[in-house]
Amino acid sequence: MPVNLLKRDREGQLKSLETVAAVVFFSLLLILGIIFFSRFQAEQGSQQKEESVALDAVSLAQIIIEMPEIRCEMDNCIDIYKLEAVAGIAKTRGNLFYSSAFGSYANSVLYANITLKEIYPEEGSILLYNRTKPGSKSSQLFEFPVSAYNATSARYIFSMLSIRRYI
Amino acid sequence: MLFYKKRSESDVQLNWIFVLIAGAVFLFIVFKAVSLQRESASTSASVGMKSNFEAAVAGSMTQEDFSGEIDVGKTGINFSCGQAVFKGISPADLGAAFAPGGISSDSGKVIIKAAQWKFPLKAGNLLYLTSPKNSYLLAKNNAQSAVIDEADKRMPDSVDKAIISADNVDELAAEISGRKGKDIRLVFFGKEEAKNHFNLLNNASIIEIEPKIGAALNYGNVTFYNKDRSSNSTYYFGDEMMVAAIYSGSIADYECSAAKAFDRLYWILNMSQIRLVKMAEEYSSSSSQECYNLLSSSDSNSATFSILEFMALIYPLTKNRGLAGISDKNAKKIADSENSLDSANSLLVRFSCPSIY
Image (tube, rainbow over the protein chains, first blue to last red):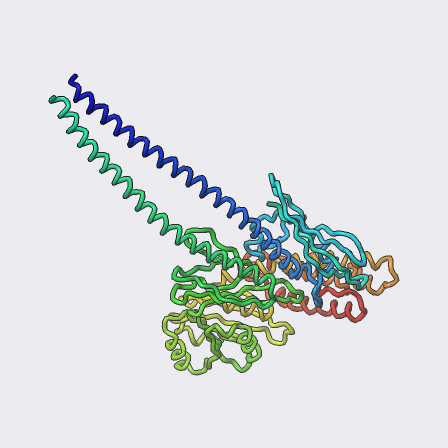
C-alpha cells in the first residue's frame, strides 16, 4: 500500500476518535448535569414535603376542632363525651371522616395518631384515631392548645390536641 | 484506487442518510415534547382546579358561613352527585354538594357557599355551587311569602336572582327572554303553581316547592319538571335543604347529595346517643336522679329514646333515592320527631342536665 494512502487512513481514524471523544465528553457533562439537577430537585421536594405535612397538620387540627361531632354546641371547646363517641365510630368505620358527606376526605386514608391530652386541672388522654403508615420511617408531632369540656362535671380542662403525622 | 473512490462515495451517502434519520428523530422528539407539554398544561389546569375545589371543601368544614369563588377558566366543569368532574383526571368529591349539572366556560367562575345544616343538631355544612351564568327566578306567591323570603335570603348576593310576579305570564316570559344566554331556574312555591307555565320549559328548568302547611319545620315536596312536562317529586326538610333543591341540576343529583347529608346526620345522632348513655352512666351513681332519668333509655320521654326514634326514621334516607321512597306519613313523622328531639333537649336544659345539643 502506498505511504500517502496509509497516512490518510490514520488521519481519518484520528478524526473519528476525536468525534467519539467529544461525544463521550458531552455525554458525561449531560449525565453530571442531570445528576446535579435531580439531587437539587429531590432536596427541594423533601423541603416542600415537610412544609406541606406541617400545613396539613394545622388544617387537620382546625377541621377536627370545628367538627360538630366533637365541638361543644355553644362554646369554642371540645366535648369529651362527644370525642369518646367519635373515637368509637372512627374505629368501627376505619376512618375519622366516616361519612360520604366528607367528600374527598372520606375517600383518602389518614395516617396519623390523634390524641387529646388533658393537662389541667385533670390529667389524662383520650385516643381519637390511630393509623400507622406501613413502612413509614419518620413522623412529625404537632400540638395545639384546646379547651376540653366535661359535660357531667361542667368543668373545662386545659388540653393539647396532639397530631402525629406519619411520613 | 477505484476501490477507495467507491468507499468515499458510499461514506458521503451514509452521512446524508444519518443526517436525515437524526433530523427525523429530532423533529419527532420536538413535536412529542410540544404535545406532551400541551397535555400536561391541560392536566395541570385540571389538577389546580381540583385542588381549589378540595380546598373549598376543607374551608367549608372549618367555617360555618364559608363562601368564595373558584376560577374555572375556559374549560368549564360538570357536576354529578356532589362530584366535580374534570378533563383528564379523577373527579373531586365535594360531599353533600348541590350544583347545576354543568357550569359552562362563558362565566369562568364557580360561586361556592356553605350553609350550616341543623336538623335539629348541627350536622355539618351543605355546599351550594353555581355560576354567574345561572339565574334563579323565584315566582311570587303571597301565601308562601315567608318561605320565598327565606330562600332569597339564603342565596348569596353574587348570584343572579330575582323575586318575580308569576300572575302575568307575559311578564314572566319577558324576564326570561331578558336573560338571554343564561341557564334559568324558575322556582314556583305552592301546590300546582307551575302547571300554567309549562310553555316556559323550553327556555328554563322548572321546580315547584310545596311546603306543608301548619308544620313547625319548613318541610314538604319538591317537584322537578322535565322538558317533556313529566315530573318527579321528592322531599326536603328544613330551609337549607329547600335551597339545596333550588341549586340542584336534577332530582337524581339532589337526592344523591341529600343521602350523603343524611348519612352524616344519622351517624351524628348515633354518636349523640352513645354520648348520652355514657353521661347517664355517670349520673347513675350520683345524686342527680333527674338527669339520669332524662338521659337514660329506660324512660320513653328520655333524650336517648327520642334520638333512637329519630334515627330509625332517618336511616332509609341515608341511601340514594331514599328521600323519594318515603311516604307522606313518614315525612310528617320525621318533621315531628325533630320537634320531639327539640322538646327533649329543652327539658334537659330546664333541669340543668347536659343537653343533646
